[in-house]
Length: 626
Image (cartoon, rainbow, N blue to C red):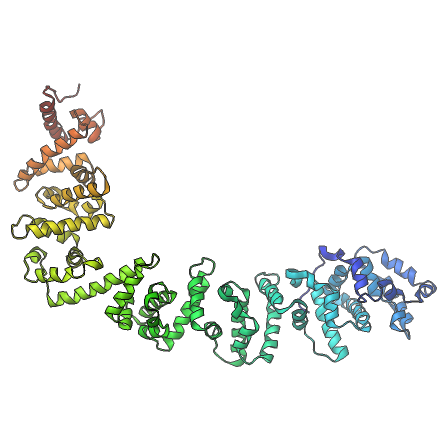
């Protein structure tokens, strides 16, 4: 039997209906129990008295254990000797009428497991089966008689399933047949519905064992009647699932069957191979591409894609081989919108990781299309909103490679300070100008080679040299615009140029000119009101720290001249910010508590600022606490 059960709340289900159903609608249970001429027989043989003693029990299990039932059965067996089926009495029918079919069947299942009650339970079951088989109830008839079709997902938890399985064994022995439980269920439910029931059952700990056994029984039938796993792909009608292939439970069934097949046949079939053969590679790739965009199917689609990649890599399919395998050459103008391009890109990543290589999508495409043709394809791609971004990136990579090759012919000096006066710089400018339509800039090339900070320093220094000033101004403007385009705030550039690391030596750095210039460009483009000194104050940690640094720089020979230039400009900034007294400076901007005076340097700055305010207001203010 599939498993043992305890009685459940279903015990009272379908009592009246079941008594009629037992004879397929031909006879009522009372006729089975009594026969046509049994009324007098019951009375004369005192069977009714024995039944009344059985009838006193409220629970079918206690009824089955009663001595009255044994006596009743003995008398019934004696009575039935030599009588035709229509005149025989069925104890099981009477019990079902009183207790309900579920309760009786649950008792049969349970009591057959215990030695003390096994005999009576087996006798009851055989009595029931004899009634069915004498009325020519086939295994399929009993499936219907038990109304298992209505159980749906509850099929695997009903006690009737065990009864059906036992009846199939009884039927096969009596009729010399070879029926199977899974065969009857397949016929009764239909294959698709049964597979859904089994798939659900395998997710439930209470039904996993029986569902797995039935699935294996079904697989055994398939393996006898099919020649390959591909036959089962067709049997499951997976071709018709289309995009739903990744969500249907039948995919899991197919995967389980492949495992079963491989173990039975000592073969090495795999799910991705069967799907590729069943769908065709192009259709399968479209399904997987769609599946990866859906959160519910992303995991299974990604796994299947990786399985496919493993097949390719075992067959030594290089990235260029896969370009050809995917027939991307034929895509032409549609290259940038086909999902197969994503597959190629994913495979390149997979290949590089597996082979420790450094292949790139742009290199594979250039080899497959040729540079000129690929640029035309990318130009078409840029007209598509969904492909524009990717096409632009690939286009820049192509031009970047051309420029890299050109720079090998016209190498620039490694020293960034001399780059603008290099003999090859002019040649590079002419070459880059040819590709202005491809969003390629000279500043981008120089930044890539030297870095933002080094290039910024070189450009601001070149601003002070007559021979390079004009080109330096243009390049610096390009650098500022590039920073804005990349989304860099003025504070971002302060950090990018590492100005804070200069500490008090910042006063001598021409990068301050770079910061001031970028603030102006940023405000113009963004419509903001950032300030040069506001940026420096933020970058150095606040008014007090920045002012203290300037004050200390004014005491050092190498920095005091530039510090002397910055200090009055800082005072003007504070004045413009509404700091119209030394108190506002020391308590508000410097954050000194009202109960304190501040440190020596702060007091010095406060005194100098008080004089500055005095000159501004033409009033005498004594910078002491009042």
